[in-house]
Image 1 (tube, helix red, strand yellow):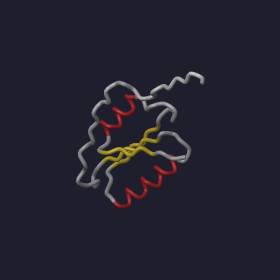
Image 2 (image 1 turned 60 degrees about the horizontal axis):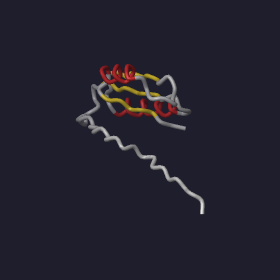
Image 3 (image 1 turned 60 degrees about the vertical axis):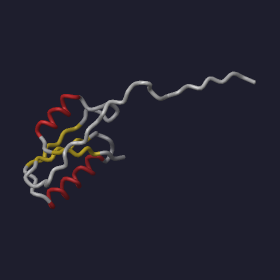
Amino acid sequence: MTNTILLDPTANEEIPVKYLSKRLESLNGKVMGLLDITKNGSDIFLNRLEELICYRFEISDVIRVKKPTFSRPAPVELLSDLADRADFVIEGLAD
């Protein structure tokens, strides 16, 4: 019988607590942030989503930003700036 080594891929670190943002009562008059992660089709998805949301609500402004590449997390500065400027953010995932 051969020796087999099993590895545990889970981290032993504590998982940081995450909190959800408070739900907005309405989207009317709000600034919508759209984060394009630059995967194939995410721009098409976000274009349609912007169209539908702006049709249904009185969005005051739309801020669109793109990640430099989908294979890495968005730079903290990009996320922080978007969070400062938008009342809510939608991240577009697609393939």
